[in-house]
Length: 410
Image 1 (spheres, rainbow, N blue to C red):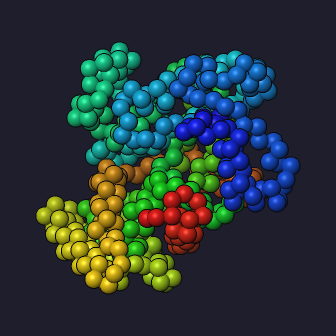
Image 2 (cartoon, rainbow, N blue to C red):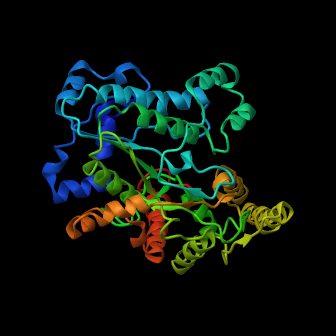
């Protein structure tokens, strides 16, 4: 479904979608496949998903597999707004599913961070108890919906309203799917493509992309974490492939299977190793902005502040002074403000290190034929971090910094 936004027409937005590099390649390799894409306007925040009667008839008579990915990823929205998208929106989708005459499989895409608690260590592939009941939610929203401090307390160790809403929604799906075969896919931080159709392709700054980019450019030289902490990132094509495979093998009308799409449980990498590899590739290609990029790790707030001051803020002021003297526009102080904002936005993930289990995902992958394993790679063990991070860095440079997609400024 495509939701109209900011006055853009559906045709215009669909044209933009079909004209990006992935669909351009699809049109070259298999032109007929593009004709199978039928865009239907919808809005998960509205009654009946704001669909036309004829579109609802088409869906209820023709669709057999539903992948529910629609969600708000604005992590700082009030609880009521997030729940209207992610919780109530899922209710509306399930209502439509119950009308579908040919429905065979429902894949609900959640997030591992729905169950990754502050101070926690492990996220299992299982359903967890809901963090609150509906009455408690209504009471909280009526009293504290726009109160940021009270909202943080209500999170119950979750990172934001998005994760909280996803935790509630998982339980609603498990309890209300009826006789529809249903499973849940939980990705961790989604990053650029590993293989198909273009290694390194990405179209947003979500996940660790901007943080790793700042480090590789030499702008961020201090990190308030333990160097052995794990970063869990998963290529977007692995997530898509898992959704397809899980949907195809989804045949239980009773049990709701959970598949974590993640890496720390089977193919872990530390923040330090990720930093080193991104720096290595950037320096090799002479793309670092400041000389000799490096990172100092500490869990001392005093040292962290000192490192930031002497290794980043003061050099930024000096560099801006030189730019001003030579008749150019200062920029490094502004960059440092963005660097610090990124740190703060990711602080929950930097201050925690979870092992996220993925044996259900790996077992599902092993059940495929060798041919299907090649077509739908989703086992995180097969990610070669050295090559993948090189492609990731090149993807950031090619698709963002050169303005091919998204904003062309860091």
